Image (cartoon, rainbow, N blue to C red; front, side, top):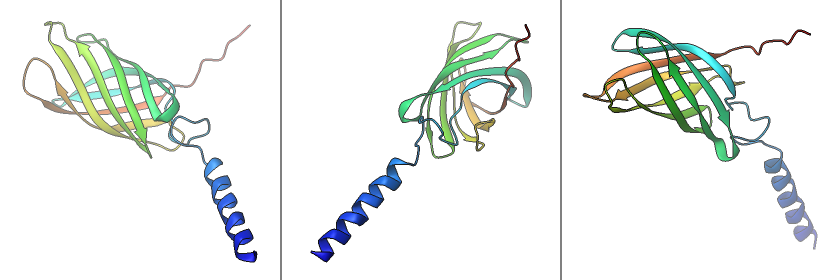
Length: 145
């Protein structure tokens, strides 16, 4: 009887410990990405200013938008997943020449989600090209009234 009671207590404590630890997409998970980010998109040694708008949902799924304005425009749809402190990211877009493009990478997320960076591969009209993304979350503007 004593062994059974001890086993039940151990199982209950283990379940309680697991229930209290948030996972990717859960509120309080340290590596969720959310909100507006700005930074650099480096491709073929050319830096471009770019923005990301990201949202993490259940299971660590990430969705959002990617944008480069100059010297050419890219408006892309972001999809991805967070696993531990890594964001596996895919950006789908259509370039000015009408080619479908993809940017794919596995980026490191800083604890708190404030920065996201890492290597990417860009594929559109030609052969794949190595690149890099480096973004920092922008502070939300305070409303004045």
